[in-house]
Image (cartoon, rainbow, N blue to C red; front, side, top):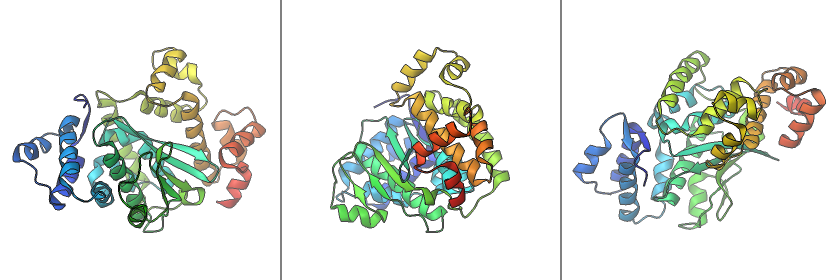
Length: 321
């Protein structure tokens, strides 16, 4: 357990209420500890998860808890998600600001041949399988709700073995579920990324993002990757050495720090450039303009990179949006 990590009180309260709905008795001392302050030490939420895992007779309780979670349980991150224009933008918000909710787990978006995979990268050791199932259950159901029921993931991946019949998982998540995989995540088709959300609002989004930036910066144990992501988004032309210099370290040190978070600078930068490229093309910007903004030497270089990420050229992608 890691007593220097923390989680928002609202999220913890949602887990507490879910545990009680499922018949788990929580001692008054723990209930009090879980509802004090703006953030709750992770060790206390781990105690709650341990209690939930040991007391429940249903192996899918954690997944059911996740599917019950709503945007409001994610505090300002949930509000930010609701104010995005489309699902692709919401994934970007989630990867950047998820540490506000819980600062020992993060998400990353990795392009694949059919779209993207939203990978979940937890850094905890207590009730790992249950908490991963809750997190991905929350992602799937929240995305479905935000798109007015239209979102359907390609499949959900877990690295662990199933804790119940696979068909039961698939009935709750509404898609194929694969176990024993190399990563935890939700595979999403390219066509889903442009789905509009039911409460999009650019003015509110900009205000919320400013508040979230301040909250993210205030986390005492925030990882390095969110800082790197912010710098890349603001300065997509910058390479590793320039980013490292801005953070007051060498490129080699930056690589080591990111490796400790199970990520590489190259992979992180390419994933972000792909997201930004899709956003620009969907917004009607020309291939030349998007490629130039992202720092490619010419249109051909941008087209080669985009084809590697998506399987089609940026012009083909733009025609299909």
